[in-house]
Amino acid sequence: MPPVPGPTPLTTAERAIDVRLRAVLARLPRHGPAGWLTEFLAFGLKQAWACVFGGAMLAVILAARLWYPPDAALARNDLLTVAAVALQVAMLAGRLETLRELRVVVLFHLVGTAMELFKTHVGSWSYAPEGVLRLGAVPLFSGFMYAAVGSYLVRVNRLFDLRFTRYPRRWVTAVLATAIYVNFFTNHYLPDVRWLLIAAVAAVFGRCVMHFRVFRHRLRMPLPVAFLLVAFFIWLAENIATWSQAWLYPGQVAGWDPVSPTKLASWFLLMIISVVLVTWVSPPQPPEKPQSPELRPAAGTTPPPETTAAPPSPGGAFPSSRSGPTRPTGG
Image (tube, rainbow, N blue to C red; front, side):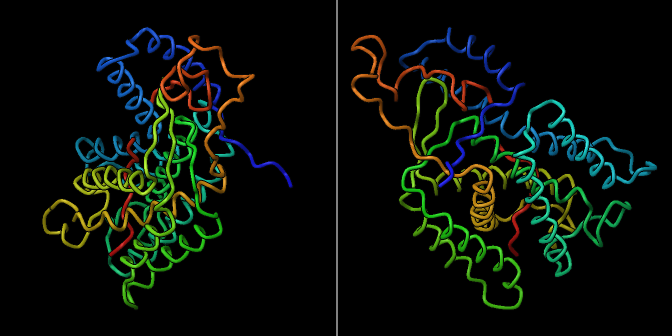
């Protein structure tokens, strides 16, 4: 049986930044409230870096809403598409994303665009009818919003060196993700079973624990909690994007209102699809096994692994959350 590929290492550019930031963070306190503040700082920096593509897309959308002339020769939707392509090229050229990871980002783009075509057709949301870079009623930049989720997930996997205890069988997660994706289409014609699907997610992933390295510490979190946290921050980004009129829900056409919190259920379910797609590139890894006694450092030389500075790893000390503008696909 061929070996299962391990976590994707940092890119060349990320390793260079990691070395510099590790040196800075290493001078900060190790213990007490100040030590935990150091970990919190590293966590925030890593999350910010993980969502660099989505954050940049959201910034472009917001800037276009505030300052782009409405009578410009290039339609705003086309500007957003050109900007999205430029950002993706810059990610590759700057070695911030690998070609291996680009595969899953492209897959997110295709899956998201297919959903966009259907959802705009049935009136779940709409775009301004401007521009030529579009498929029917769907501007091409919309697929990049789903790609932003894929970019975040593949990057956060390596930056935090994610490991999993009791991760479910991947074929089970694939079946569940397929059912979720199909329901986003069929709920317009058949009963919406999203709450049953959420219960199924709890049953399949409920026992799974995610292990992640921040800087000196490796922490744990139930995986469903991680799904919910990411869904919440994407919902916040969606509020910014709809206020910027990148797209609008029917209730926002006459005047903008915050996106309904019920959309969190859609985002929570979309996270399952997203995670299953990412496992195609980065299969879930178990926690590292503790060292055998003959390899373990002598007593008093190095604190236990859960509370000490770690050697450089795929997660590094590298800074780096929130995905960029994307959209819940329910409704």
